[in-house]
Length: 134
Image 1 (cartoon, one colour):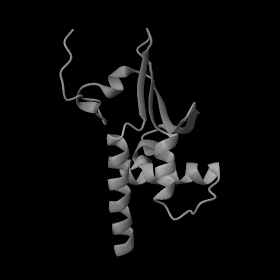
Image 2 (cartoon, rainbow, N blue to C red):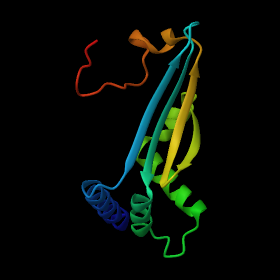
Image 3 (tube, rainbow, N blue to C red):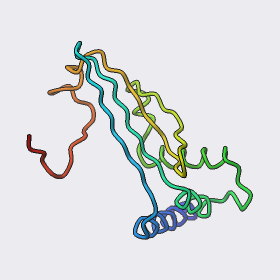
Image 4 (tube, rainbow, N blue to C red):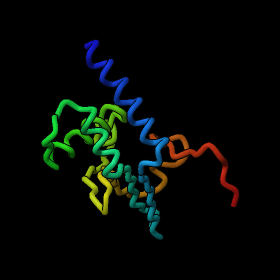
């Protein structure tokens, strides 16, 4: 257990270093609200090849790593950081995202009526640090 904790500290330090060195992280939110008040929602989070290489180097996978092993490593790390299972339990679908030099996960969900996620019924938050004025 102590080795795991030490390994995670090294992982976090490495990721923070990479972020400060302008390595790429891509995020995207999309909401498509229709006239009948139904909504398609998607959320994407992805890292570029440099960050993926760093993630692999901090793992115990060795030098010859297949794409499938990289996907599993990314998915496992994201689940640990975000408790992804709770999103799946809330009905979100998860799919792999691979475009250009980015590796990521895309979460999607269809809501029958936006009233399901407004007011006191909200089960997630997309609040930003700054308020947006109309």
